[in-house]
Amino acid sequence: MSLSMTLTAAAMWMDAARIRRALSRDDYLSTLDPDRRPAPPPARLRRAGRVHVTRRGGCDVVRYEPARREPALELMYLPGGGLVNPLVPAHWWIVERLARSTGAAVTVVNYPLAPEHRAAETAAFVDAEYARLVERAGAGRLLVAGDSAGGTVALGLARRAARRPDALVLLSPWVDLALTNPAIPRRSGRDPSLRVPGLRAGALAWAADVGLDDGSVNPARAELGGLPPTLVFQGGRDIFFDDVVAFGRRARDAGSPVRVVTAPAGFHVYVGAFWTPEARSAYALVGTLSRHPSEIVT
Image (cartoon, rainbow, N blue to C red):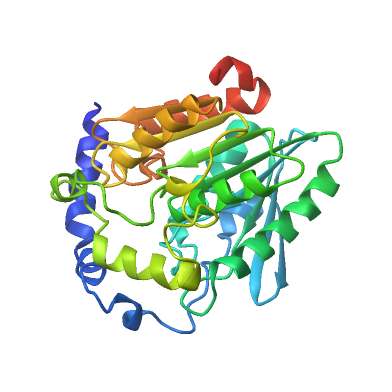
């Protein structure tokens, strides 16, 4: 446990008070701005490489090609946001570090969100973008990464794809949308950002008539055999912690090569705090995974 991680978690606890209050409301969806849009790519990204933004179906798809790039490697990134919130500025730090550690061109897919859209619409949009990326990658390697709810979407994609990704990177993924784990109330007091009522409202709106017991929307109810080499990073201060550990165990029991890396003092998507030793170690592992998956996940 590093001092920088502990101090960052403490700072988040103070700064995220407004978010916690909103997520604690049963009517959380009514607080959302109907015109919410993802944060645009920062100027520093354009200085470090090429950025191209395409708008399809009302959603922005952003391609970032770093100046120093591995030409045979593509990475799709699916940002989190509880299935209802768009990409925020902090997500660009993750995109930059993923590109830097792997050398990949990163395609950031801002997918349709609830409550305006449902899980089937999200899946159709993501599948179409993935098909485009498969064609671009050709015989090269193709990775998929997602944080939080983006991890939920990434897992669904990996299970559906005819050409599965060469590797999957999940950053504090939301692997049980029902949020019924009895350990959640105990961890909630140490989680600086997440609360169950708002998350559950978003999950129910996204799943809609399909329901949270359906494996097509909820990884906790899905068959986990056949996943690609999967590297998961999870913090101990996160209410998702116990669900993620259980997910890793269940996936391995199903024969999938999944490795879960935990940081006891880590908060939700702790790898976003790129200045901490835990995050730097995580990105180093992702870099090795992109080149030699079998060395990281067996």
